[in-house]
Image 1 (tube, one colour):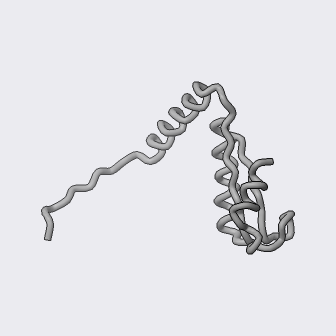
Image 2 (cartoon, one colour):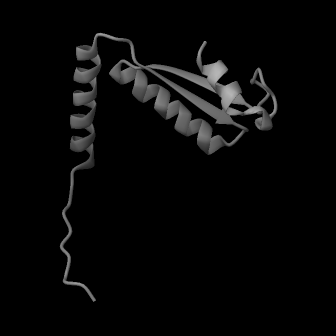
Image 3 (cartoon, helix red, strand yellow):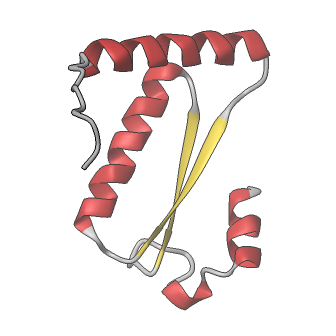
Length: 94
């Protein structure tokens, strides 16, 4: 057995706010647009909610967010198997 470990309680909301403030400052200081491209494959509702939360967070801190869907009725490429590196690279370059 190892020596007794102590736990440190953190304030997650305060930490999150600090991280977001630093990101906003870095984005503004860069003088360049920042973009996050995400690829959602299939119809997993949990993954869709995660992507929606990514979009909200990006909007709040000034990051352009683009969601590309594969393997859904709303997708331009309908097969999840079509998610090759080349296809994804081309899709995100738009």
